[in-house]
Every structure is written in C-alpha cells, then in structure tokens.
Picture 1 (cartoon, rainbow, N blue to C red):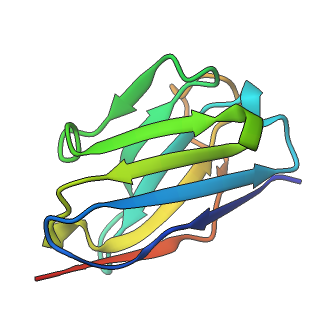
Picture 2: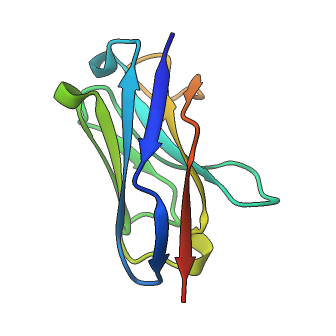
Length: 121
C-alpha cells in the first residue's frame, strides 16, 4: 500500500509564491521517481514536473518551466513543488504522483488526493 498526501495549497494573489508538499508512506520513497500534475475544472489532468529517484534529473512542461521547481528530500519521504510567479491560469487541483521505478519515462501509478490552488487578482 502506497499513500501520497499533498499539503500547502490555498488562495493566493497573482504574482505570489506557494510551496506544495507531498509526503509518501508505504514504500521505499528514495527508490522511485515523483511528479506533480494538476487538473482544472473541465480540463484534462496536466503533467507539470517530475524528478528521478535520486533527484539528479528533472523534467518540466513548458508552461511552468522557469516558474516552478520540483525537489525532494528522501530523508523526509517528501517531494515538493515550489511555485513562483503564480498566474490566474495556474488555478487547479494539484496532485502528487509516484512512479513505478526510479525514472519517469512511464506514467505514474500512485496518486495523492489533491490540494486546491486558487490564484486571484
């Protein structure tokens, strides 16, 4: 059994920053890639970022590259998404994802419950 729990979402003003956290339990966290996705109402779930098991490699979708940063602290079984320069269109439910190996070339297999991020003027 693998559980992922996001935290850190909330209501923020455009241009501000927010840091999301994802704590994992039930598996050896350090051996698996992690990622972040989001889903806005009426839209498909969108890939945002992924990080390899050791944290050496990362991947970002173009819309957040340079604004969002994925990181991880394996000693704390936690992955993070630092979001800077938030825009109205960033409003969505943000999901933490766990992959089946240390690399992220395949779709994730575990998901958190999601945390709401709302960006206002």
